[in-house]
Length: 148
Ligand code: ZN
Image (cartoon, rainbow, N blue to C red; front, side, top):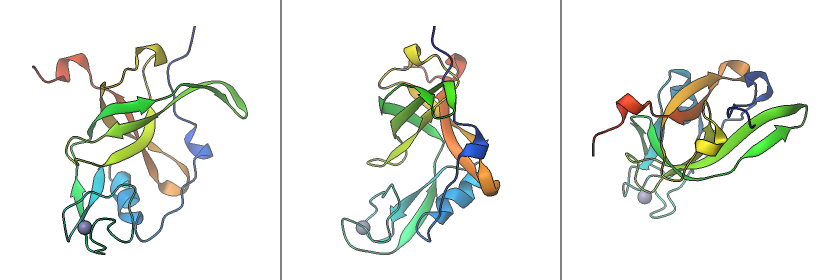
């Protein structure tokens, strides 16, 4: 039996920020998921970059997202140095309200056997070191799924 997918314990997660990434982390502290959209041409640029790869503009609008995502790809990792029993599911996520942007995060709170490409997930924020919060994603509750 595999365990439920977890995040690394917050005290083991350290981030570094730069002027181009800090707004992302500051928003996460407030439980908000944001993505940088080029002020010149409108291209979303994740991970954040100082210059737009499309038009070289340095203008950025930080757009607040709804926090929904779909799984583009994922892997299942059993064990981590010092944490032999942990199961981690790193994932690349599509962000429907930031077309073209993809976010690398972890899926949590689900049996890894139940994770699927295209699965809808929603953001949750988890405390890490130095007062920051890390956006993680868990499956959208069944009753909250849009009717198709
Ligand atoms: Zn641009």
